Image 1 (spheres, one colour):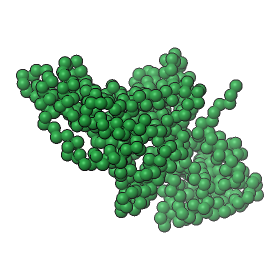
Image 2 (image 1 turned 90 degrees about the vertical axis):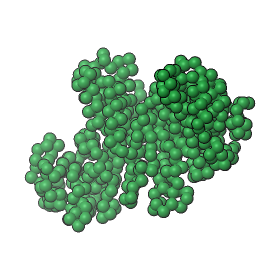
Image 3 (image 1 turned 180 degrees about the vertical axis):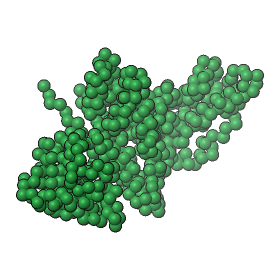
Image 4 (image 1 turned 45 degrees about the vertical axis):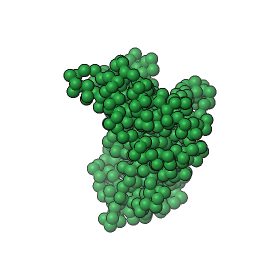
Length: 527
């Protein structure tokens, strides 16, 4: 029988046991979940033979059962001094760990100087005392330790609950409410996956709410609640899936075949085989040709969440806050596990990193943070980056191994224009209307995918105005005549983009002998 794999929280708790035994006097734990983390701290203190005490601004000092103790008071400086006096007055005092909940607000500015001083005195008072060792554990939502304490404090970021820890939460509910019959046939695993990425308290609340409203744990309801929680963090955007999936994307056959093959890497069989997990891909090409649509469609095809990262929105005028926002993004992504992470128009967000922008180095720092995370991450997240301008991309992003594949998205070929038109007709509820798609595709030569899709609503308006009849091929052709395509208004820029992509990107489109865009694609067909 194999040993049970430790959760991330259990691993961190084991590290705290080692730190306490090594007589580290000041631990600074970054977390917003006091109750969940304190349960692990109880066990860690016991394993290290320490007695846990608690302090907060409301109850002052209490024991593990919440009983008030006459040690210090609501002033943390007074409490720390009382602990020191208590130790000095007793030859062999018990080993104690003092878990302080509201301390960070007392450390700011000049008013916090006495508390900071007492913490430093505390850290210096027990350098080698084994029998009567004392330690302070500060619980804080922020990892910003005052400079005066930086040399004394060991900072630990408490992890979000992983899948195993979420499983333990749901198993308690299954036992408590006798849900064994309701959560079978894979429903338990679906309910666990739906909550991965939430804090322990949020997962508990989602499950409880589902039980109250549906008398069972509904994965769809839990996932909906997770969407709300992620929106509240304001660092990630949750996108609802496109019902048609990759069928909503016209053309791009090479790319779609590749994406479908990579989906197999997330199966149980692939794990047993040892198939490596895909890292991600970058889509570069002409605006309006399906890059963003593909990102939205792949999450549907793979049946996983789609999270959009807006690097520009994460920037802040305050020093260090942009980096903190990015760390929060990466932490949530790592916790969620299998998902598609979409960085849209990444060259614009990182423009300051390559053009010498006077943003105080924020763009350069963001680029470095993203590159480091992409290189070192261990989660199952699949990164999909999109960009329009090849020349504006930092060369670091194009290094071999950063992505599994780099794709070039050109103007659609004649075959693709038919596929895009059919997809647009289906999206507008006209999938069964008989039109000459080939004739319309010819009229749309040189159009981007979005320009082709836009003629369908125009044709619908024209048909509705003409006695509310059904649209025809002529309606679509007439609508196409009113469009001045991007290939004409930005022909030189598109030519330059094609030249920059030549030999560096794999074409997402299968080359064909017809259509004006075909020869350009064949030049880029590097296999």
